[in-house]
Length: 179
Image (cartoon, rainbow, N blue to C red):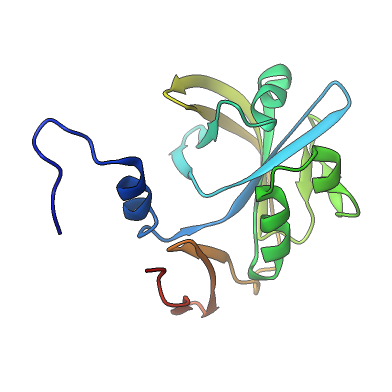
């Protein structure tokens, strides 16, 4: 392993490879404003507080979903189950938002945001802070409503540019890493 020289940043490909070594769950972040739904797949998501319940998502500033959330001040998070890989792939593609939601069962949160049926759980959030950082925006959401899905369902996972799933609470399997 060769470190970057002092005072220099690693190149973007090296940083992407490093972050690919971090296993995470997969979620879809959604918004609704002016009669339009938008959503995208994320794995940059974290809980930041229990009092009040709050979470943080990181979205690219040029994503179609970002201005929709900004306009409404609300967003939804659907934590995907292992059976929802196709949903994750659909929301990760650069296709019109209407195509992402076509024939997909959703329910509406109190603020109108779409929340995906079949998810491990969902959170509806009110935007509490909006922090632009480089090519992304960090959006803090105060959670206003949650639902928990099937307690026996397993999470969809992401590691090394591959989806994976747990075959049980303590047995997680991934394909071999990309070389």
